[in-house]
Length: 440
RNA sequence: UCCGCAGUAGCUCAAUGGCAGAGCAUUCGGCUGUUAACCGAAGGGUUGUAGGUUCGAGUCCUACCUGCGGAGCCA
Image (cartoon, rainbow, N blue to C red; front, side, top):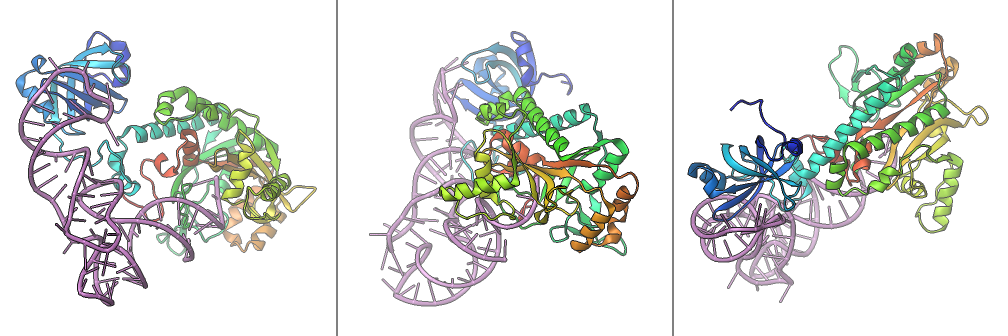
């Protein structure tokens, strides 16, 4: 037996009628006195095998009968198309080797609670549903990179240790290592992206992001992955067009490459098929009008006031008025970051845009056009009481060739949860880090 | 940080203030087409922790711990 020569379960269609060797783990087994049906899992799929007592050596039969869930085994047999089998193929086994007998695998085919499953996340990843979710995540990441790479963007990652906050200092993880000054884990690569966009024209960063907020909801992780494209010589309009093309491409790739997984997840694919540019655009003023109408109709409890930021129920209400993602733009500057560009006609409004996903998935993208004026940024930094020394390098970008530019950030986990149609984003990352959860 | 809900066998759950229970999992036995297989048997408990009320507490009260859901904040 060599380790390299074997067939993967997702390749079985090419081997019907011939003998193959499969290597994997026992997913589940049913057996009678003289026939057994072990289901083998190998990471690419699950296939049912058929073992007749008379077809294998007696010691092999005994070893197979003794297997518990997740026992490691290698099976040789003939591939047969069979309508009775889930997946369409079966293996008529003529030989097998059990590498490890397992008898106390914690995750049974019965239901389990969230706490138990999260404590066993390292094993939970093997189950069919989790496997499907993470395959979708893989495709989302692949689509993100393919789209940006093919659209002329250059990957230029931003640092994870940063000396100052992007937008404030209350929600950052402090790191005590760099002599003489405090460092923080990055909250956004935004400011660095503006530097790389001026170097490459179009750039993006893609990596982990950290928020020390005490958030305990299905939409929050303490450590999550964010992709942030940034374009020089770009306006809010360019940013919105990029966002809708970007999301349309991701949805199309998930539909095309992950149809099996979407079936496992019982995802209503018509929701994904609807994600096609152009997306509806709503001015903040009009979004507020919608919320006030919603309040009058009794659909919303609280009466929204112009100038505030949307809460989760507000986002859900706005997005429920459309069957596509909706782009809300021109927010009040007071509730947005200091670097946002202002509307020329109405300086109280920022040229920002949030993309709200349908079905209550909330804000998946946030971004906009950045301010170009050195003087304006000086004022804003003072107004927000930020340490100007820490932003001197950033201000250099306005001293040397300042041009209109903009971009956005997208949370990979929120996007993946939306694609999968699952409740909680903790299942969209292999090992979630949340408030009160750092293990496994 | 605030509000709400929960904690009983490895897991999922039941038990009017009155003997601690079931299904699954595990172990043993049976079964040649099973689909969360089925049938029979066995083992498995300091009811989250510490106090209190009571003749008697898994059940009622107080505090704490842990988890879940939500708010705020955000992607």
